[in-house]
Length: 104
Image (cartoon, rainbow, N blue to C red; front, side, top):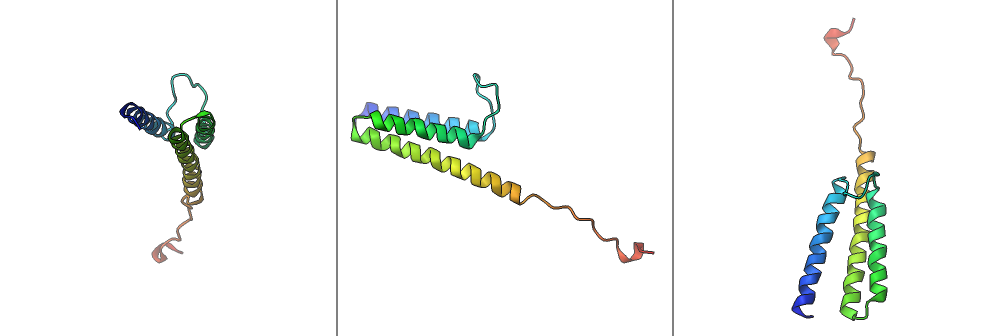
């Protein structure tokens, strides 16, 4: 792999990492006015990567796109799992019993 390809791959990975952080932080991009659902967005990115892999002629590029697609799928699964775990462990509020000295 040439130096230019390695540099381009590094740029793509850095851009994806920055975008991933912004998506998980719940921020909105300039062209997006509606709230988004991160797992759906991650799966859309994975599908885009799979399409790029289909049209790549170079086996190294195809492998890179497939790895990126897998990474986006894992991000979607991880986000969905963490989100559901957070909802499952919401604090339950119980009325505390009054101390013995306060009972009549």
